[in-house]
Every structure is written in structure tokens, then in C-alpha cells.
Amino acid sequence: MLTIRLDTSKKKVPLYRQIYEQIKTKILEHHYLPHQQLPSKRDLAKELSVSVNSVNNAYQQLLEEGYIYSKERSGFYIEQIDSFNQQVMSKPLHQDLLEKDEKPLNHWISFSHMATDTMQFPFDRWVHCEQRVIKHSREQMNNIKHPQGLYSVRESICRLISLTRGVKCFPEQIVLGAGTHFLMQMFIRLIPENSTVSMEDPGYNRIYTFLKNEQVNVQTFGLDDKGASISDIRRLNPNVVYITPSHQFPTGRLMPIARRVQLLNWAMESNFRYILEDDYDSEFKYESDTIPALQSLDTFEKVIYMGCFSKSLMPGLRVSYMILPQHLLYVFRKKYADFFQSCSVLTQLTLQEFIDSGEYQKHIKRMKQLYQERREMLMLALETRFGDKMKIEGANAGLHFRITFETERTTEHILKRAKEEKIELYSMNPFYLTNPESNQGPSFVLGFAKLPKEHIDEGVNRLYRAIYG
Ligand SMILES: *Cc1c(COP(=O)(O)O)cnc(C)c1O
Image (tube, rainbow, N blue to C red; front, side, top):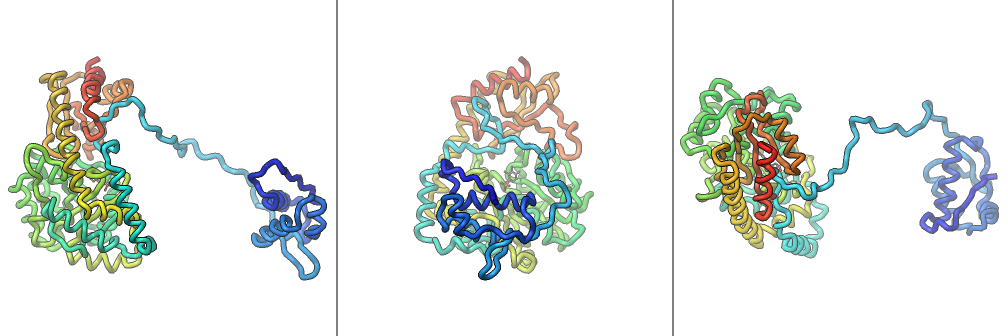
């Protein structure tokens, strides 16, 4: 009566599973009447030449999911299940939601400013740290309930940035999060509603559009040769100024001490003014020592420091953090008491081990040297190839600089040609937040972190062809 066909060659699908699937499908397609009795387990087993156990398992599963019900000393019956109101057909995905799995661009040369050189990352050391964590800290793997991240991890980060960035804080003030956007989202809920945030223009477009989409009042101010224009900021009168003082994103300028003091003074004039310092790539400084963070000058709890391991280690780790002034920490603790930490515990603890064992500093030292060499080679190759037809700015820190070319070609044309030449190239236009057309140029952000030395000459040749060829 059930007309079940078993496929004994399909070793991968157990017999009970096949019986279950076939009965289930027939019930959903209303091949049976509601409350119709099913054959006894013994009868069905005999009919199908399988063990009673297989039928029993199938019936148990159907029972569990509610497709059938049992009556004591009587047997099993089909449950009454309504038909779907609409025809059940799996909907195709809308064309504009379609995604393509992004394959690595083989044989391309990358001038990306968002990537690090994963070939150079000491994965063996990292795995070693991870193994130690797994050996000694298993019980921690359940521990997601501290909204700010594990305390011991924050202690290590605290020691590290005090040393490398001059940042002054207690581990209690550190909030870990899986990326700057995530932290920004939390931060904007800590400050008064209707706050206005002002940003550098050109600036970090991803944060700009994010804030806009979050319905935050965002404005932009221009840059002069010292960075953020104080007169613009005074005119806009925001609550929060979001800046990248160590290596302005994307122009690469360094904010001199005079301007830093002016900004702090501006912030101190009112209780509700803050400076958000995005210190994303400051581990890498060339031709001079690193400059201490703006936060290190702040004794008035005006600066919210944001740091990450995306440029110093790799973006895929997704470990970033912010440091809250104590009065905002109260707000955070109240508002986010029930939040789970967004960074993986295993990654947090591995990072801690990586820092505490000295591997982090070793890696930075090595990469600084390597990036320095690439940067110099790249600048030299550009100079040789382009001569005075190009201008480089903001090359003293970080993993990218700005380059402007003398050409009649439009940005679109150059980007199209770059694709044909198989180079990953990013225009400055999107970073002009309010008016992409105001990019005098055409100019581009040229990253050198993912650019091995042996690719530099070829990369510059391709770039030349993209612009003049
Ligand atoms: C890379 C980068 C960050 C860090 O972003 P995460 O999401 O924390 O990885 C922040 N600001 C700028 C300008 C950056 O380039």
C-alpha cells in the first residue's frame, strides 16, 4: 500500500532514512488520507525485506516530527495536515541578489590599500599559539558573556598599546569588537541622541555611509596642510570629530602637534564634545619613529581611541577595539550588559598568546622593514617610469600613499584600463565624501602591503600602460 522503493545501492542513505523520506513526501503531497492507518512495522519490514529496526526508526522520526501519530495497541496513523494555501515552489533568487564567489585574482598585481601580505604572516607561530590556548584554556571557550571581551586579552592589548602608541588606559576601558563598524555602532548609542559627527573630507567613506545609514547626523570638513581644519570644525560645531591623525585616510598626512593641541582644546570647551581617533595603521611609520597617539595627550577624557589588528596582522582576524573614557564606560556597561562579545574567544586568546610571547612585536618589526623596502622600491620605480608626470603624497606612514597623475584620461578610463592590465587599483574619488568630482587629479590610493618586491617593476609598467598606453 505504501509503494516504497528502496535503493540498496545507495549506501550513503541509510534504509530507515529512505523509508522516512518517501513516506514524508507522500504525506505532504496528500497521497494518503488523514487518519489512515500505516502498516504495522513487522508487515512493512517484511514487504520491504528490511529489518523491523529500520522501519521502527523511520516511524519514530515521522512521529517525532508530527507526520504520524500512534494509538496504543493499535498502531500508527497519518496526521491531518493542511495543504499549503499557495503552491509550494521554491522561489528563484532575485537577479539583483545574485552573488558570485570571489576567486583570488591570479596573475593580478595588487595596489590594494586594504590588504596585508598573508604570504608573510607567521601562520606557524600563530597556530602554535592557538595550540597552546587549546591545551591550557579549554574551559574559556564557553566564556562569551563579557561584553567587552576577555579581561586577560584586554590586559595584554593595554600593555601593548601603552608601549607602542603611548595610549594610556586601564584594561577596563577597552571594548573589543569584530571591526570598526561594529564598534562605531555601539559608540553612537553611548552619546546623546541627535549628536552630530564631523568627518574628514576626503575621508573614510565606509564609515561615512555607515553613519548616514544609521541616521546619524554626519557632516564633513576639509583638510588644510596640517589636516583637519579647525575653523571648519568651529563653524560646523559638532559633538564628535572623527579623525585619522597618525596617517590621514586616505591622503596620508600626519597631524602635527600644534593642530592636535588645538583639537583637544576645542573638545575641552564643552562637556559633550569628543574626538574619535581612528588609529588604524600607525604601527608602520617610515623615516622617523612612530608618533604617539592623540589619546596620549588627552587627560580630559575627550578622546575615544579606536585601534585594530587588521593592518598590523590581517583584516580577516576581525579584532578591533575602542577605548572609552570612564564616564562613557558607565553608559556602555549599563546599555550593553547583556551583549555577547563579537570576537571569537579562540581568536582573542590566540592573539593574547601571540602578543605575550613577543611574536607580535617580532612580526611588526619584520613587516616594517619589508614594507619600508617595498615602499622605497615602488616610489623609485614610479619616479623612474613617470618622472614629473606624477606626484606622491602621504608616504611617510601606513601601507599606502596617494598618487596623482598628469594625464588627460578620466578616472573611469584609467580604472577600466587597469582592469585590462590586471592591476588592482583604487581611485581616490569615493573618498571625496560629499563631491567625488572634486578629486583633482586623477589620483589614486596606492597600497604596497600586498606587493612583493619582484612584482613592483611589472606593476609600475602596467600602471603606466593603464594611464598612457
Ligand atoms: C583598515 C581600516 C580600519 C580598520 O577597520 P576594521 O573594520 O576594524 O578592520 C579603520 N579605519 C580605516 C581608515 C582603515 O583603513
